[in-house]
Amino acid sequence: MSAEIAASGAPGAIPRRQARTPRPRRLPSGWALVRELAFYLACLVVLFVSLFPFYWILRTSLQSDQTVSAGVSATGIGIGHATTSAYSNDFSQQHFLTPLANSAIVALATTAVTIVVATMAGYALARLPIRGKGPILAFVLIAGFFPVLAMVGPLFLLFKDLGVLDSIWPLIVVYLVYTLPIATWLLRNFFAQIPKDLEEAAMVDGATRLQALRRVVVPVAVPGVFTAAILAFILAWNDFAFAVSFLQTPSHFTAPVAIVNFGQSQFQVFYNRIDAAVVIISIPIALLVLFAQRRIVAGLTAGAIR
Image 1 (spheres, rainbow, N blue to C red):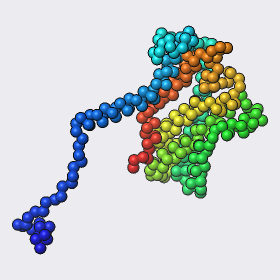
Image 2 (image 1 turned 120 degrees about the vertical axis):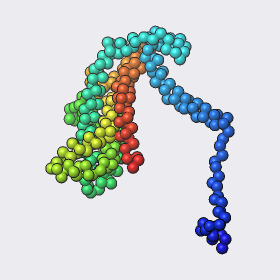
Image 3 (image 1 turned 180 degrees about the vertical axis):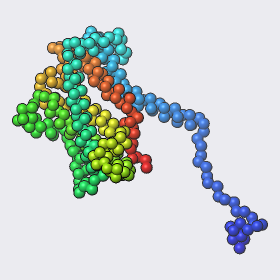
Image 4 (image 1 turned 90 degrees about the vertical axis):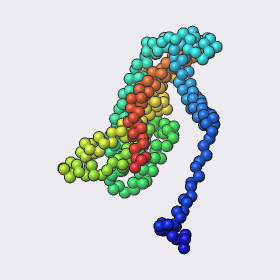
């Protein structure tokens, strides 16, 4: 009876003590400091291991032919006497501007085609009542992971029969193998997070579905579209397998293929010229990611939090 009175909170009842939840044990201040220092030390080690190859490429690209011939023992891991002779050699003697222009044309055209096709395909898979939508998405995913080298042989024979071998224009179609699956998946997931009321309101006002997509949905989905465009550009810009298989004339080479012939001599390979070209083709990608990192993160994390 007393237990019931105490539980009911009647006047004069002795209040029951509530059980205290045990507090987590805190580490001594010395151990907390050691753990924090160990965490930052591990981060520094990972950062050093990740950035050291880039430093080595930049270091080698700033060395002269004589320094490269002397070997690593001449300067250690330092740069030594920095010079831009390798960069000027790439443009003056190797004519690196032409491969850069070829890569830019192919990458920009591939990105434009990818965004147009992937936007319509992703929107259709996210909004329209398509039969077999699951198998279609599975096929797109499988196509994205299909081995690239397995397609080189059939495509080589096809382009040879069509008479379009040794040209940069077929590469625009071929690179869609890289770019379309990932862009379609990304945009489909992004469109699925956009409320349907937006385009429905536009269609009530008289807009067609394509007009609603172009004027209402795409402006809202700019982070996802921008992310898909950047990924498509990077994949097309860095391709080597298809380009080296289909291109034969040096004036038609893209930048990754042209680098293979840089720095070759009868008795030695001048890696400073090769690394200078690597730095040159890495600059557009680095600048693109640097200035668009917020949009990339927004596009990749779309739909992660509801």
